[in-house]
Amino acid sequence: MNLKLVQAGLKQVLRKLEDLHWTDWAEVAEMFTLPKDEQDGSYWKVNWNDFKQKGISISQVNATLETLPKFDYKSKITEFTGNFTQLENYIVEHNIDFSKGTIIKISKLKEEWSIEEITKLFLKTRNLNPT
Image 1 (tube, rainbow, N blue to C red):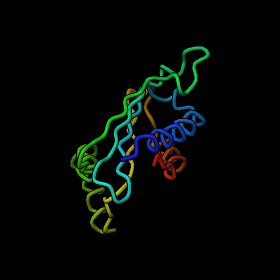
Image 2: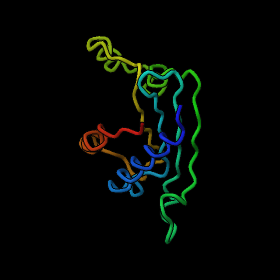
Image 3: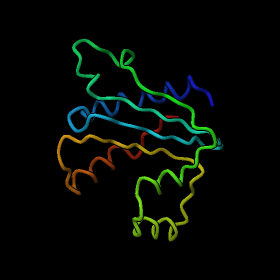
Image 4: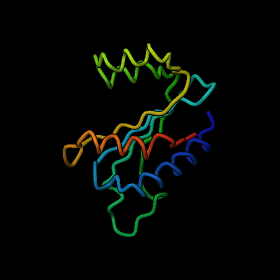
């Protein structure tokens, strides 16, 4: 895996998320990515509170970036969604390919989100591509 390419892609994603004001919504963001035609994925984690420091730039924010050897993308989705039958049925019905993809997990939310807010977030972020 080309770590410099991943880091460049993450900077692009960070800028987009910053434009969406994620720092107002949650404290922590994690991203799991499995690039096309790769077995190893990557894991990235950042604390959004770090962005609130006066005068700090994206390149000065500390984040975790790790390689995930033989990353099982489908298992990670199952881990996060638990026994969510509707999702499992959707995956089977639409023959979804898990050979590549990105999961963005946000946590330590500052307030409860409505279905409309979640849908709006999904629509704004579904085309982000960190690799």
